[in-house]
Image: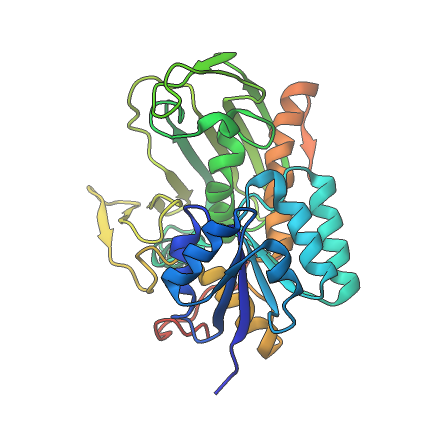
Length: 367
């Protein structure tokens, strides 16, 4: 039986609950500790899940821990990643991989120098929904892919989130908040991107919070909140993406569609692990619903970290890799750069398309 990697979680906010709940279900992880700047919160979370809770320093200094799962706020992602690597630990981080390309590059270089692995959310592309779509594409259900569209349209977070300010600060905005889900899914299905262009704007320079407990407070918007982009994929398809916090009404746009020489595939919401897949094949008169062929259709957050742990022990590449996350981060910045400069942005990075899961894989076993 293959050993499990001793794992510590840094950052015990809301998202940590599902990682702590799922972590020890996998055959490659053993979550043994959690830490936070708020030590009392970490201790309470640790007690709740039967693990050690303490400070960030406690987790980083623990010689037993081999892998860090970094669930801090986006602005702290790179610094915690670097500290974990300096401490000789592999690290898996929530999205985005980092706020800037420079920070992300520094993380990748340090990991390579130390012979350590880095990975990043989102891992929703490893869910049954996107994995089934990848299988359908590989099996030619819609022929040769020629294009794709992706839409994330909403009205922003100030109406419901208790602390929505960071969504409108550097590192936030709809592209950096939700773009990783959509772009990672597209790269997992179609491969890396070679060129992007786009237009971006701040539609409302000031937002008023209408949720509790900060009702009535004003938020100054620092980042574009409506971004329309175009992508050229190395494999040939042309993609479009729209991310917006500026739509005050409803939207009926699909989440993702992929168009091929032999049909169209309606892809589930990439923010989730499952969802409904529909295909309209050339010559058909209606959509056909396709059952999921893979597991992890419920909230399986942590599967990316577990896959990385299995890869570290077995010596194979992991799927939610730092290279994939960097490529997505560069594309997100590229849309903004193209808008500011009025020109196409040529991607400097590339990545391997993540290996799909094999059919028939047992639950919580990653090979």
